[in-house]
Length: 110
Image (tube, rainbow, N blue to C red; front, side, top):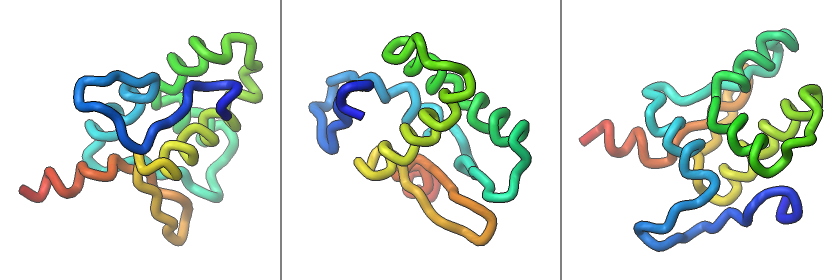
């Protein structure tokens, strides 16, 4: 991913902006997180990923020649990468994967 997108840092300085901030902010603003279901139809899967508009911005900036068909794989790949680098939380449940801002539930509980 390093050749295709900027490096994802686990730690960053407080005022330092990254290419992924808008995506993480999108998840922070989702009260219930984002569920990517296993048995969803292809059209619905694409609509779900298209709802995360900052992903389109990221792909447009760093992978402008990516085909629309390939973009869905890359969008999901970016979500998994952000979860691996602790920018998003990822939980498996019986029907799919739940992505969420890792601190959103903590802050909403205060």
